[in-house]
Length: 164
Image (cartoon, rainbow, N blue to C red; front, side, top):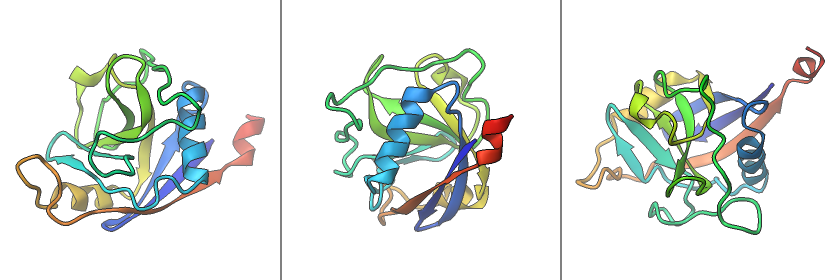
C-alpha cells in the first residue's frame, strides 16, 4: 500500500491511502504531493467535532486545482468507504464530481457526508496531531487564528503489498 506522512505545525500524521478503490483521487493527491503543491498550505477551515480542511494554496477555501489540465475530476464514492470515525481522509468538493486539491480529516463519524465526498484514506499514526489541531483557537469563520500549515508531505510505498 501507499502511505503519506504529513509534517504540520502541530505534529506529524501518517495516512494510509485507498489507491485500489480510488485510483484517480490517489493519483491526483500523490501527484500534487510529489510537486510540493501542499507544502505551506494552511488548514483554512477547522470545526471542532466535525473536520479540518486544507489543500488550497490560496488559503481561502476557494482555490486549488487538480493535477490535470481541467480543474476538477470526478468522485470515486464507494459504499464500503465511509466517514465512519475520527481520522478519515476525504476530498472536499464544490459539488458532485468537482474535486480539485482540497481535502479534509474528520474529527468524528460524519455519516451525513457519506455518498457526497470521496473517502480516500485514513490516519494510521499521529492522531495526537489531529487532537492538537482540533484544539487550535479559531475565528467566527472557523479559520485558525494562527496559521497552521502543512510543512511537507512524504510518500512511503510498501513494495511488499504489491505482491499480495
